[in-house]
Length: 407
Image (cartoon, rainbow, N blue to C red; front, side, top):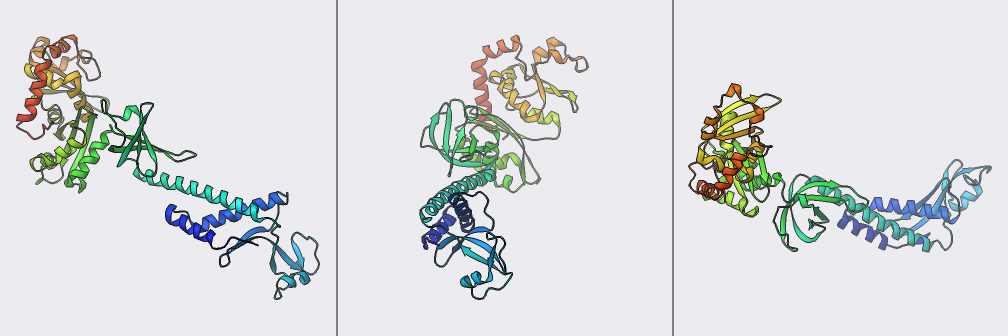
């Protein structure tokens, strides 16, 4: 027997408290390691009926071989005579099993090395599993971390027990990530590796907006107000469609909060990113009109509404065309992502020149979201660029409806 004393158990209990490593699991692994070391010591790969046993009271550990008590020994590796067995245990009888201490001399150093290796390995495995389990639960949620450094355009963020990676595509364009700053990120994915799990986080994901609204708006957390859709271009603008399940609760007003307190908190968290709160509607015409705010809409014609295609033709006043399309097509692009409808926008003058007829409309001539704007519209946007910015700001400040919230 080899005496480890109570230090081994104290260490195991400490690991169990701090890292969640079960004491029984560690002791079992240590015993298996000692048996393996014993087999190497005697240079035999297969040794039947051998096990390591620890005496919890004395802290001693030893290698034991189990043998069957018989009258006549035929296999010395598996059997022992009754006379020899009596020397070990006076109360033993025939057909009983006895455990014989076969711990080699000078096995203490080997046992100590095995114990150290097993405990170190178990600690690493337990830590890896704890991190994996913790962040698997956090996958798809917000968490707060501290920026550590920037490596190869990736931002390394410490989020507790491990460092997460924020790839360049998940960063907000133009944002400066200063080491030491706190940051709220969205846990995108958790990948299991041979070392600590690799956690991928995002600062640009649309779900960050959803989580922020759920945190700031109790009605959303309680299910009274429901977020139907979110479209986001991180760092620039977000559109969010909401509806109320209670006729007495205004969905848009709940998101704005008293004197805009709730929305301002969210805007501040998003570094002054503009946010349009859109009232959701089952009526596609009304929904599209709301989604294109703050622009005023003259008419909306539904061109196709089936499982294969959803297309709408929108006419706006001449002075609202730039605002409806948005700089670089941002407003209509976000409206498309929000509603799921392809939106072709024309001014009243353009529509009259086209002598537009809904039943004769050619989809190939449409100004669809994914296509580049026609040269005529692009030129008009460039000519009215300064006006479009002013119009947008004025619409945000003087809007008659609370749906038009921008910073």
